[in-house]
Amino acid sequence: EKGTYPHYMLKEIDEQPLVMRKIIQAYQDINGELAIDSDITAALKEADRVYIVACGTSYHAGLVGKQLIEKLAKIPVEVHVASEFSYNMPLLSEKPLFIFISQSGETADSRSVLVNVKNLGYKALTITNVAGSTLSREADYTLLLHAGPEIAVASTKAYTAQIAVLSILASVTAKVKGIAEEFDLIHELGIVANAMEVLCDSKEEIEKIAYEYLTVTRNCFFIGRSLDNYVGLEGALKLKEISYIQAEGFAGGELKHGTIALIEEGTPVIALATQKNVNLSIRGNVKEVTARGANPCIISMKGLETDEDRFIIPEVHELLTPLISVVPLQLIAYYAALHRDCDVDKPRNLAKSVTVE
Ligand code: F6R
Image 1 (cartoon, rainbow, N blue to C red):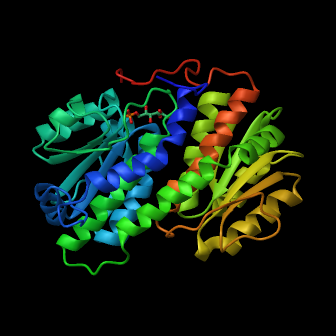
Image 2: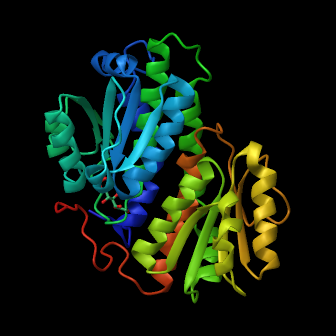
């Protein structure tokens, strides 16, 4: 099933352009317009607040989803880690709608929240890769990721599929609400798919980065602002999971409030710079950590790049950058794990589907 690939993870990273194209197709109506089941968009239109509940990588996709839903569909969104939601349920709005994001559709922490909110009489939508999974069956509505089976424990194509489906949900809901379209999403997702292909063809260059920065290090930091911050959290999780390097993602603006104390001579700091409005500030953060000895690796987007950048990703719509900036981070984690002789597809202590709370 891996075909010529040495690992499922690499195969699944490479499948991402194809998954984007499948999603664009799966969510088009006969007129070639993006479409979502009208029951679902009606539920969103009616909601005064959306509560996204998820774990791990799916939680990270939810953070990006919040920005998409708020910016496009203009509905306030809260994003919660499922386990924490169970202990401290937030004060809910009058008409909440719950969105559960789960690749497997079997995660016990998420299911426990779903059972609770269903008992309270609230509506729930599950976004999952597995049709007929528990979270799909127990929710009122389901949207599928169309990513194909994800075998590697570290989630890659499911994350980008989740963000793509959330972008479509946000855009179609905006249309149903009569909000003027900000951009042609089908066109922009097509650009994303092409950009992903370019990145998947840049493996040698990315492997060099992983080799140079991560072969011997004990830790690694990811910094970014705005959407880049969320992608940094995901990049750090990928690296932790499969290479066992202690990795943390931080908001650029938070560095000075504590984290910068951790920077030592040679500490790798991977900085993302894909957002125009914070480009100068994140570069300021890179200067601060470099002055304290860090070994910076700036990954920027075309149009925002400078001479000091180590890797430049192709330009896509600024709300969709997480779909492509995550790809070099997935590949960096993959090659770091490989160089450190770790079991890429089956990292220690982890299971693909976490069915205990
Ligand atoms: C990370 C990873 C986990 C899962 C988390 C949620 O690579 O695989 O963090 O994302 O366990 O799983 P699902 O999405 O199946 O609910």
